[in-house]
Length: 75
Image (cartoon, rainbow, N blue to C red; front, side, top):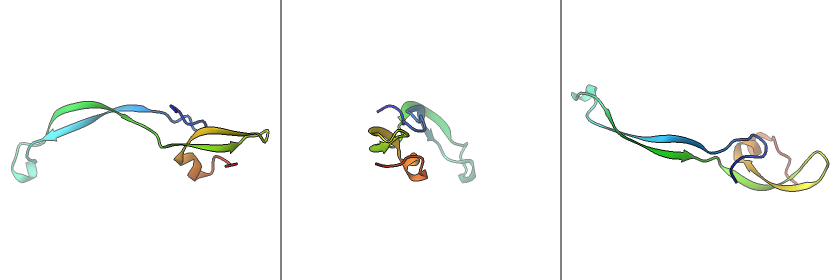
């Protein structure tokens, strides 16, 4: 379930940034980054039945964006 069979979209890594402090507009010295923890961004994958070029039906993991855009023909 790691990648989309059509677009190749997969899990990407990133960070969750925590900022603290009073903004300069409100009279403080500005926001400061106090911590940045690692996290993962996962695509919205759905397991659907797809008809390929040969006419055979397969179950594959496809992202919701590929389904909405019409890149996949449902069987």
